Length: 170
Image (cartoon, rainbow, N blue to C red; front, top):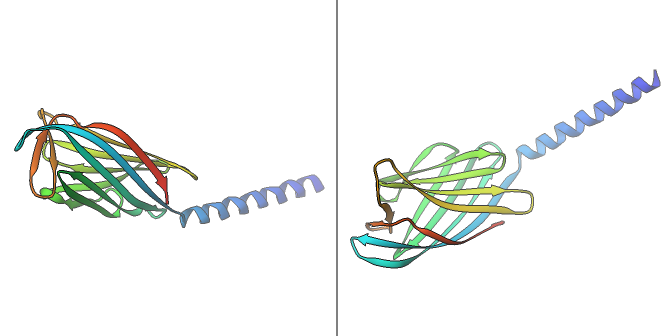
């Protein structure tokens, strides 16, 4: 009988610890900062060879599936996309385009800037003490050149070449 009471006590303790850890996980906030460097060759409206692109992303994810992030992209001139609110909701972005945040897995966030010819995608994976960030571009069906917006005009270019990435938890 004492063995059953001991097992019941251990189970009660385990359930209490489980619910306590779930409650603290629900209030957790993950904040991150990422950086990227890339080069690109553009044909229109100007011919630009090895144009440097610098991008930074800073944001946070809340356990209630809300969050915010700012993607700052500098290619000739700066352009900023702000992602805010509930994850998965589309928001207006520069150049008459849209942006959205998605959860793609446990502690993984995806930011998508939907440009006329392509998507610019930032994937962020956050762990307890570190994070990884990746910047990629995806052409839309039927398109052959990538569009970049510099805050004032669209540039039409080849595929951007990412040369470095960084990510840290803040």
